[in-house]
Length: 309
Length: 310
Image (cartoon, rainbow over all chains, first blue to last red; front, top):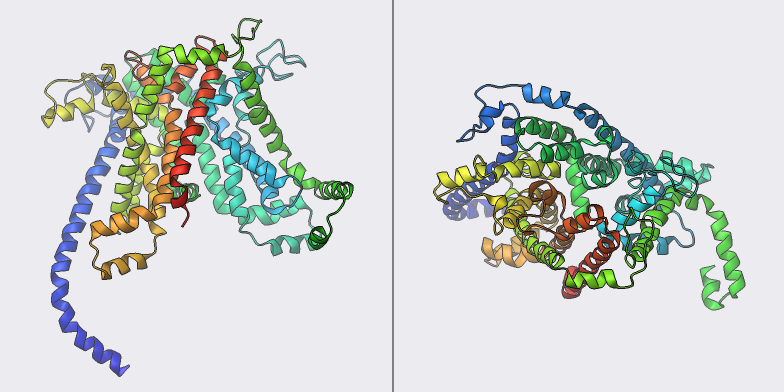
């Protein structure tokens, strides 16, 4: 101990003068980092902030040069007009309903499959899993037309007979969105990776006690999968809420539109009502924004998890 | 049991019986898989086979007869000038992928220097990622607006341009404008993944380099970037695959115009399938797209295979 102390006291006077110039450089570096980050953040945030600001401005103010970042007069009129316009309120409900239903159905089916792949041994398991992973490389566009026709010809749906003829099948109904979205191989893959880290002894102990496989799945596995389930739930919700392409293909009735679809068709039809469109944009961003802010931890972890694989 | 397998191979029939026994014993595993399997069988396996079948037919959804046309739909791809344009546009769009990696890495490196307010910065950069694509398209349609748009205002104010530019109406600028918007929307996602990658690099490596007298630029190029290679590889592949399928921005902001200069493969495919109702041709196009993605991934894989494993 005495030696270390004397060493410290000896080294101190030598290291102090060396530290000074380094510190100056460090401070300068920090300042540059903050300047770069702040500039970048402002540029990235600006278009978004403008949308929020414009959504509270009367249309006359939106069309002004220079742009008004802070509204002269704040009005809620845009929001009132948006929500009372034909259909919009209904579209908000549709989007919320679909996002939650798809989330629940997918979590159930995905986690069941993931449990089988992660913790059970049965003939064909590895071949099946590899086959599923292999199809992930196929671009979504390849499924677009066959799946559209499959939905159109679904037996006994939408006025179809047993052979799938006569009506519009699952098209132009929520079935057409929920059924194709009821299972996701990506999500199964991540859940499986996570479940594999759960020790087998735990499951064997439960089996010894006579627990059925479903009991083990629901009472042992699921409670231990909190983080991965949360991340997947957030992803699925955000994905379905933000989705535009599939509803565009499937839905044709005005009252069944999702919010994204309604908003997009509204802006393509009415090119001048930017005030209402900005209010609608804010409303359609709000739910995913809230989910992101409240569950940021899971969001970031989930993305990092996706990225590391 | 594994030992008996090795010492004397069981006769075929008994191995078959053993498999059957295993299947019967683990019936619940198959039951758990059933919903996913049915979905996979219909919407993936059958769908691909069905698509393949459709691509050899003239398939108009309204007309009842769907005549077999052999390879005609595929041969048409070679003659269709608009399709060639869409391939060129899609590949041009991919310029955005490396740019997006660069901005994402830059922000991640800056945030990784233990700055204060890291969470706030991260949120601000990540905001465009959670914003619905439809909304992003609406916002940027206004940013690029000619008479009142934000971009023109600031470019004029700082004297970078002399007169108003109609970004989305200019055949040479519309596609770059969409690329720029893509970087805005993608940087946050790349940043988060790079941040995770950066945090997995052991601190000792930097310490060792410092002892050897490496400056910060050398540490970046000889430690950080090489060690981030698996992350970069992943981001690059997923970025390219995403760029191949770009649709929503084009649909809302430019409708493929001006002069087809923003018509991407994804958009042109949609137009053929659901406006022209030419589903056979659109499906052949989808297979061409698949072939391109597959070829691209293969090339990538070949060139980087040795480097990804550490």
